[in-house]
Amino acid sequence: MFLGAEAQFNASAVLGFNNTSIGSSKESKLPTSRQLTVGLEVEALLKGKHLRSTYFSLNTGVYYLKNGYKESYYYTLFTGTPRPIYSSLETTYVEIPLQLRLHIQPLPLIESWTIFFGGGISNNILLDASLNELTVEEGFGTGIQTYSDNQTITDYGKKSYLFSTLEIGMMVNRFRIIIRKKTSLQDMYFEGLTGNWGVPADRSTYMVNHDNTGKLTERHIEVLVAFTFLK
Image 1 (cartoon, rainbow, N blue to C red):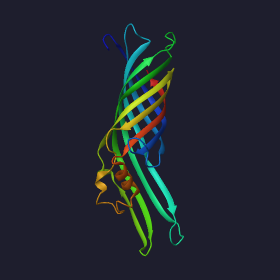
Image 2: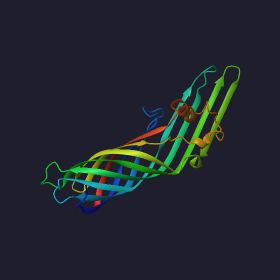
Image 3: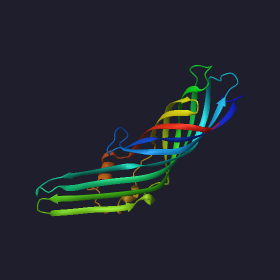
Image 4: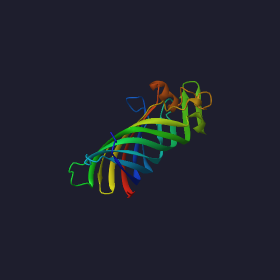
């Protein structure tokens, strides 16, 4: 496929928004999180000698992503006093994608405008994770029970997580607009919480959602703008 190809290397700065949903493989069970993501991308363009209007590229890079979820609400039972339920997960990753892109120039004579389709994998390296939960329970005849915990849970997770990636984008001169979808290929649940968490499993928002779904899947939708500063 790449025989006789001429390689050209580009470097780009990337900024965009990440929308993270956490839940089962089909739907979100926890509130979505919208965060900024930033990174640097390196791309090797592989242009054949005869098909310059249609060509492939390989791209990789380094991205910084902070995501998670936050859920907070109150409920009222016997005494009429609002009781809080709170759960917040914050995670920080360095993402290293590896993708193959197909570039198409709709107008072959205008090299500054291309559309592209890509796919591959992303290795998300876990830097930090923390969980904070509070459950105040009011029972008939049992009084008020308060359960809470706030821990750094990085050591309870895996060192890295693999995601599949699919994207579509357009390039005009040195600017690219990218829409990218990422889906985790592993259970994103922090297994080591069992027995080490101050909120009982049946009172913990995070643990109950995992038990109900059997596997916590993360799905990311990203809208990115890249500027090529080296080509």
